[in-house]
Amino acid sequence: MPLSEHEQRLLEQIERALVDDDPKFASTVRTGDRRQKARRKVQLGALLVVVGLGVMVSGVALNNVVVGVLGSLIAFGGAALGVLNYKAATGAVEAGPAPTGPGGATASRGKPGKPGKAARQPLKNRLEERFRRRYDQ
Image (cartoon, rainbow, N blue to C red; front, side, top):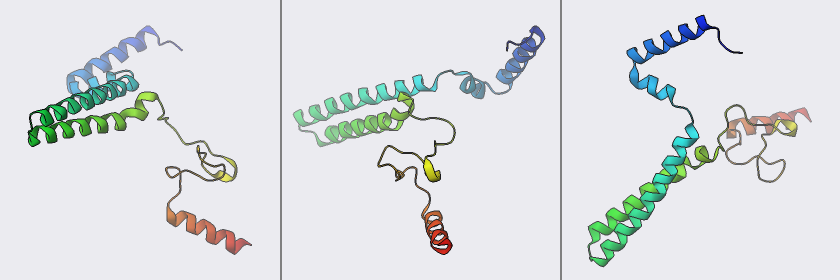
């Protein structure tokens, strides 16, 4: 449903006030696609891995341990940056609750009926549930 002209003017005034009050927050909120930022970070991570490997090889060629260690740290940082942003870049991160399967168990990619590690309940809840099932029988 489109906004009326009056509502559009009010929205523009609110946006201007927000930019005037806190420009950093406004620029953070204004940005559109989070996947695009994550993709850039993954690409930057891949570039850092390549640069780090190049620095590491040059450290070996120069017979300099410090340059080799620096290269390995750069490569490790790039790999970490890429891995940490991979899910957001591919769109695998979904907002909202996880889909549930039969019996209230959270659905996972693993074996049917067994939740994955990320979807598991805390140990305390699982133990309480087992106790209740035994007590009810």
